[in-house]
Image (cartoon, rainbow, N blue to C red):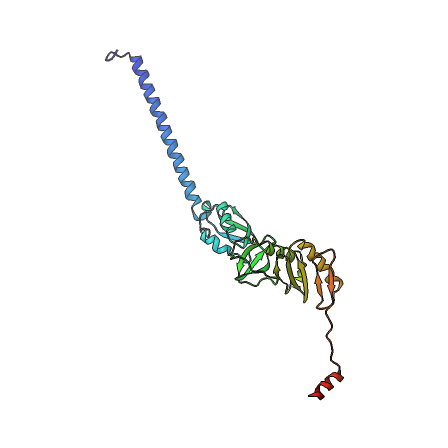
Length: 265
């Protein structure tokens, strides 16, 4: 015995200590290896080898997709790992022109952007003129003449991205949306809730109340397709019982009356 300790116990203690030291060493080496590998992976992911090389955009005609992408920090040379598709989609949908957006991160170096834009169907009066899409009435832009139909019904103050809540304007948009495209050129619709009136291809069309607007549009299309005298007025207050009023002929003054009138002077 040495120092009063059994040699076997001392040897066992050394073995335990050495085993513990080896475990700590292995653990340290493993941690260092993981850190080195992680550092290498991060370095590769942030290198030019995996940076954005191209950005393709589909479906955008009016929306400033390039500007939105740039503001979101997505441009050529940016590390692919930093791209957050969901966040970019949210920023794209915030543009009043964009109804839906999808962003795909295509490794190793490409970003694909697909957008669906609102399609304006009419211009709506509200202080100035606003482009409005779909019968639901989404305001997409101000002061642009991309479409012919004009809803001459004063609305509350609007701004891009708003949804029109005025039931009369929504009814007018429903009528416009249901018309064939060939009848929309020069179309103007105005009036009040119970007395909507439209001008379609030179015809004054009395629409009446804001009900059955799609049916009224279909009935009007059938009437005009069958043939209606030029400048005739059309009553669609009841779309199942439409009425056509021919224009009143002008009263011609006879030559005799003209002569007499001239002679009396």
